[in-house]
Every structure is written in C-alpha cells, then in structure tokens.
Length: 486
Image (cartoon, rainbow, N blue to C red; front, side, top):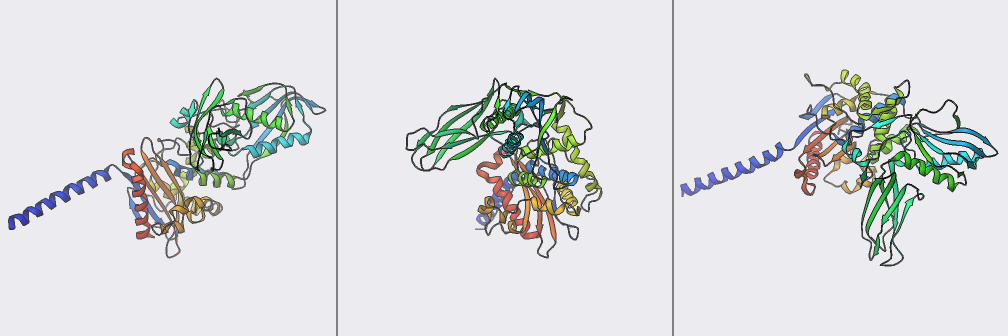
C-alpha cells in the first residue's frame, strides 16, 4: 500500500515538474517590461524588468505628442500655399499654378475644397500652364521601415502611407463599394471623391444575398499609375463600405486630386501635372494660403486612431522647424532623434530613474511603424512623469489620450473583468511581425485620488499569439496589476 502511495506521489511530483517547466519555458519566450508608479506622491508601486527595452509599437506616439506639444503649444497650425508662376489677367492665369505643402499632417479633401474655393473667390477660372506640386519643404524623405518600403510598389492596407510635405488624405486613396440593386448584379465601385487620372480600377465585386461581405482590395503602383485590384462579394442588404489603401506616389496623387477639384469647381487646366523637388523660384508669387486646424486636433486624431502618417509627418515638421534652410533630402530616422531634445531633460529630473540605467531609448521613427524602435517601461514612465510636471501642456496631453469608458470602439471591453478601464487613459500598441507585440502606457487614478502612470510591454514570438492567446494573457495580466496596485 505504501509503495502505491509513494509511487503515486512521485508520479504527481514528476507531472507537476513538467507542467511548471512548460509554463516557465513559455514565460521565457515572452519578454515583458513593466512599471506602475504614483505620480502625486512619487513612489514605485510595481516593477518588473522596467529597464528592459523592447519593441514599443504605437506607444512611441506618446513621445512625438509630448515633443510637438511642448515645442509649439496646442494652437499651432501648419500652412498650405498656392503660388503662381506667371500672371493673372481677367481670371486667366498665363503660366503655372504651384501647390506648396508645408507639412500639414491632416490635409484632406475638405481642406482641398477650401483652398479651391479661395481660388474661385479670387476670380481664377483658367490656367494655361501646368499644375505643379512642389515637394521642397521636406525634400525627399528617406524611409527605413519595411512596411513603407514595400508600400512604394504595393499595399493592401492604409496604415503605411508614404511621407511628403505635400501629402493629402494621409497618403491614402478611398474606394466606396455599394451593393447592386439585386442579387447577381455587379456592386458599384467608385473612387472617392472623384475619379483620378493616375488611378485605375480593375476587377469587380458581386452582389449576394444577405448582409455579409468578403472584399479584397490591393494596390499596385506601375508606370506612374495606382492600380487598385478589387474582388469579392457584398450582401445586397449591406450598407456601402469605404476602404482605404496607401498610394505608391503620394505627390502625383496630390497633383491629380487637385486637378479633379479644379475641374469640379469650373477652373480649367490646359497643361498637365508636374511634381518638382527644387525650391520655389524667387519670382513665384503667393496667391492664397490655408492654415490647418490647431495642433490639438492632430494630436487627438493621432492618438485615437493611432495614425502613423500624422505621427511621422509631425516628426518631420519638428525637424524642418530646426533647419535654417531647405535640404534635398532627410532620413526619417535622423529626424526622429529630435525626440531626445524634449526627453533628456525629463530623464535629468525624474523620480523614477533606477541607478545604472543604461543609455536612452532607440528611435527610428515617431509612429512605431517599425520593429527597430526600442523602449522600456521606465522610459515611458519618465515621459509620462515629465508631461505631468509640464503645467502648461499636461491638460491637453492627458485629454488627448483614449479614455475607454467614453469611446465607442472600446465599449466591447468594458466588462466587469476590466474595471480599471473606467479610471484610466492610455495609448496602446500592437504589431505582429517579426514579433507579436502588445504595449500600453498612460495614466490612472488610484483609490486615494492620486494620479498614477503605468507602462506594460509584451514581446513574444508570433506563434505565442495563436488565436489571440498572447493578447488574452496581456489583458488578464493588466487586470491583475490594477487589482493589486491601484
């Protein structure tokens, strides 16, 4: 009897050993960097590998938001200008119309329409020369993130828009798909707002019964044409869909978009479109100018939608503001080093810097659309603390973060299992290649009313996130942390 008893005990010990070994092996493949602090009465609430620098994904945007807000303030605006290269007589421009973008990160169709309205009010009705898009404000932007390098030739997403000082619509083009009148009809596919000379639509979508849809939309850039290849099915009871794809030549797309708006407004163009990278000519004369919405709007949109285009355009704007003259080109990774101008003073004045902390974060871009950035939980806490101490800008910074309880897209997670979401505001990040990355950083209220800051970064091999298993582990871990330390 004793032999059986001890044999069973040995078996259980061996079993639990292998279970624990398996769990530990799994945990070893998941790297994390974590830190929670009380900002009101500075103290560390929880720390684990807080100095370990990992891929941060989109929480990187917290750094650019802090930098531009501190540098310019929330009411700063960006300009877009139109020049004439020639002269106007009786509503006719004898010469070229030159579009000069100065890095508005949210120059969209609505802004184009306002700019064209200005031309109408001036009385312009005909252009005898070319429509020229001048890109010299930034110069050529050299990129190193894989997603954008691929986007120069093809894309099936919208988040990798290419960067230019004269960009429109976040470097994207929009397509609407509406069901046909009856099952079997071809769906109605249109470029929004207007058909463009450099955009070609290929393929079709079939109308099926019901509300479901399965649509594929890919973009290929060849011979100065943006070729959109569409296929799939759309339910006859479905609402119209709008899909966005990045373009391979954003400057040429801007030029053709401007021409379409000119035609719609009744302003004719005799010549073709051109893109030029040289500086404006001394003889070019400013005809009209349009200012962007205040910076606060760009910050809110960047952080709410996690817009990569806004983040990296703001980074280039900040870099351009530091230059005394035009340059032919800029590497985005070089421009991004300006983030340290705002961050280093925070490091020098933090309550939460551990002794012997090594070096600084590694930044290749400001959006986080790269696997090359490296940031620790401690780096993020120092940033959040630094902005907390910034009396002028903290209310805007804090107010620009996502508050899940107030945002429709987060309500699906507002359950009894995630009560901490009701008293926190934060930025999240996620990429899936080359590692599966989940990150979060922001502010929260402690039960005693103090304001806290937290940052948690998970990096793991992609196979650890099958069916969202890593995200589930990530969210459960956050539930536990807030239950224990808030």
